[in-house]
Structure formats: structure tokens, C-alpha cells
Length: 236
Length: 204
Image (cartoon, rainbow over all chains, first blue to last red; front, side, top):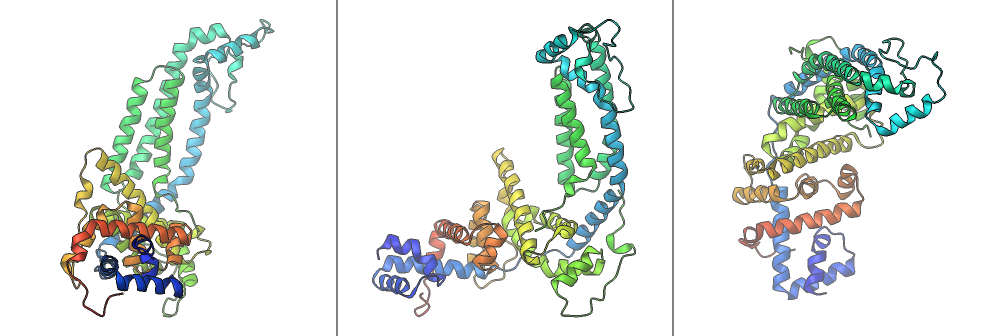
């Protein structure tokens, strides 16, 4: 055995993981090599020092803090059912107007609309200008008349913005209620994340980009409002 | 928001008098929302969970991480299938939460926040307080993953099998990670460890 081998095996040797022959070889090397003896000494001392580290005592107030967070999570649970229902209603209401805005922003989609329109007769209803709120049937983008889509685009965008804004205004108080139960540092994180997403909406150009930014903002608020910050750990 | 503390509302109660209550009984009582059972479980595991988190993330963030761990424990007990020991499952949650927090600390540090500087030793009352402080300081220098395995095995005294179950890795990986962590510690502590030779007869 040489010094390199000893250095590689010193942990296994001290852990008692080596078989008798290998352990004997280690001991033999340690008897004849002062540098390796020193290494093994330091290693033994390190282990002793680690094992002797004083226990870190949890503060007495810790259980009360955990208790309070569990209570807050239970209150959030009690709201969750109603919130989830309300949210899916909002999404269904939002979708018909969000779709055309997303699609007219894309050249490919417009080409698709043109192809679709070729066989259209004047009696066919081509435009879906103000999508009905209920039922939540999604107006397929291909039903849009190209001319109408272009003419109405800015109106649609305005309407989409207004709808997203309303979703945000409904989700924000719910999210804030949830955030009020968070520790201060995480609550600061929420303010920062919210501002970042709001900023992204403000600077996004109309169409798909802005819609994505809106979705980022609303789905973040939704996750917070639904209490995902206290999501379950994986049960194993 | 004003919340009612868990212990202040009516809850199911279980006869916890039996000293020999096993994990299964405790888990069942906690799942029913028995406040005393929950507190009992907390007290059973608080020291080791706090010790783990304290040494992985440092004193500043330890309390918040431990809160998060126990919230996850109680909220996740419904999904605990019992194919690991309760303790192993709890320590795994603790290590995961602590490592996640350590990752955030590292990112904060990268953008100029000297947060990890605050990692300091807890009140020291061991045989060699000076060495203990140096050891704690050296541990704070380690990558978080090394810190975790070192705390689990060398500080908390868990076996490699237990460490591997907690870290969700093979026993061989646990051993090799620990070896690397110890080598790094030796480098960091260098003279501090060599300063005082063990008396004759205590050599390995």
C-alpha cells in the first residue's frame, strides 16, 4: 500500500468497512508512514469534533409558529372549493376573446383563416365579434372573417385586456389573503414576483406576447390564491 | 389575517397515554387532526430536524425552513404510504427543504448579498469549543450537498443506509459523497486539526 491508496481508503478503514486483509495493509502502512499517521489522526479528530458538536436547540416558540401556519392553511382549504369553481368560470369566460387575439397575431393562423374562408357563402355567419359568455363554447379562430378580424383587432385586444384586468382584480384579493399568512420574507418575494409580471404585461406588444404575459400574471396569482406555496410534500 | 390556532378549535382526541405508542398510531391520530398527537410528533422529531436545517442553511433561515418542513409533514401525512420509516420520510423532507433554501442563499450570494456570512456556530458547549466553532465555520464553507451528508452521518450519527434513504441515493453514493465532504473539511480545517496530536494509545 502507498500513501495515495491509504488516503483513498482511510475513511473506509476508520469506518470499519474494509475486510481483514485490507485493514491489515492499512495498519501496516500507518505503522511505517508518519505523514499518513498524521492524516488518519486528523481524520479521527475531525470525526470526534463533528460528533461532539453541541445540538442546535429549537426555540420554544417554534411550535406556535407551525401551529399558526397549519391553521392558516386549513382556512385556505376551506375557501379552496369555492375559489376553484370561481376560477374555472372565469377561465371559460375569458377564453373566447383571448383566442382570436392570440391567433390574429400569427401569420400562420391568418393563412388558415383564408383557406377556411374560400368556400364560405355570404349567408354563413363569418364573424364572431362578441363571443357569448355562456355556454363556454370556444369560438374556433377559423370561423373569424379575416376582414372583420383585422378591423376589430384593436377592439378585441382592448376587450381581452379588460377581461384579464378583471380576472386579476378578482384574484388579487384572494392571493393577498393567502400571502398574509406567509412569513415576511416570502411575502416580500410575492410583491417582487407580482411586480415583475405586471411589468411584463405593460411592456408586452399586443397580441400573443401580451396574452402570454397576462397568463403568466393570472396563473401566478391563481397558484398563490390556491395556496400552492404550502403544497404537500411527496408522500413516500 | 387573524387565524385561530390549531389547538384552539375542537378536534378529535386519541388516547395517547400509552408510552408504547408506535408510529402507526401516532400517524393515524395526526391524520385525524388530533392536536396533541401533532404536537407529540413535533417534539419527537424537532431536535434532529432543527439540527439538520440549522447546519445546512445556517441560523438565520433555520426557523423558517423548519416551519416549512413541519407544515409539509402534517399536510403530507395523508399521502405518507409507510414504505419508508416515518423518521426517514421526515428527515428527507427536512433535507430537501434545507437544500432548496441553501440553493436560494447561494443565488442571493451570487448577486452580491453576503448572507452566508451570517452562518455562525450555535452556542458552543463542547469539549473543545474553539475547535467546534472552527468546524461549524468550515461546514458553512462546504457545498450544501456535502454539508447535508456530513451532518446526517458524522453529526447526527445515522448509518449510510439511513443517509442513502434520506438523500434518495445509493449507499455507495452516500459513502463517496461523505468521503469527499470529509476531505474538503480536512483541507478547510488543516492546521486546526493538526494542532493537537492525539495522545498515544488513541491513534487509530
